[in-house]
Image 1 (cartoon, rainbow, N blue to C red):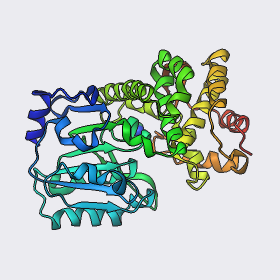
Image 2: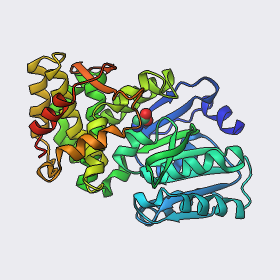
Image 3: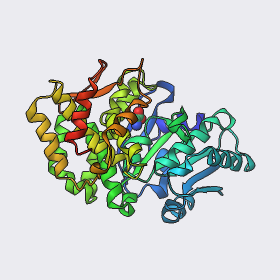
Image 4: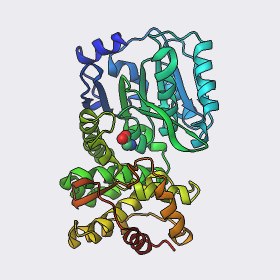
Length: 374
Ligand code: GLY
């Protein structure tokens, strides 16, 4: 991986397509996050790396859209195309991908390029982390949600019969390239899903960003490039700082789970018919409600958050989800410690904290009921 480490820190090229360069500060494993337009066709140039060999991992939806743009700039490159969808985060696809790479005689200087959303990134990241005990990987996330969240921070995973993301590694990439132009083909429901994670950053750590989103969320959902550039910059910077301080989620990184304890339960009880980012959006509102009921978040702040949610095109059929199923689903949250469910709560907009005391189940049921569950 030395060639990447040495090259990205110096000799940075001036490229007008690059709007922002950030980095995740992890000492000798620090890596750049590059935000810009039209970057897919210049992925290696914007990192200033020149690997002798690459393997591209993508999926059947994204590869036909952006694969040729990426591969035209690469040396002859094998391409592994996954079926689209969450089912690809499986042992079977992990085995198929690792076998594909080994059959193509990858060596430790072979760069894996993950072109796709969270499924591609999580699976390719896992494969990169175990192939020959670690191959370099660069993520080129193609959904808003993967750009602001899953491609940054090195979490990799597959799903098993026991649950989502229960098998995986922490394995940092060598760079992340966030190209605003690939969002042009992203459906509206996926833009809203990405917005869930963006709003999370505002609520957890940046009240000014919340004000910005109140004014500009429609422009963001309509893919205005300058609004997207600002939202990507603030979100990626916050995630980079948090991961830099707590790579393995021993403390502060758990703040990134704001809205997720409620959100995961909604996803699970809906049989995963509700998108993760949509469930997180509603989860943020429910976490605000719980914070208020516990006397921690002032009423006016809770109301601001809930009003903002009402202005979003979010449609989750909560009246079809049973409160007892939702309560049950929360009990298997993998962030549970010593049998106590840990919630991330709000003291104010932009001020999240990890609440370690037990919360009375009756209060949580009240929150579900107020949120429309039956
Ligand atoms: N998506 C939460 C994290 O990366 O920690």
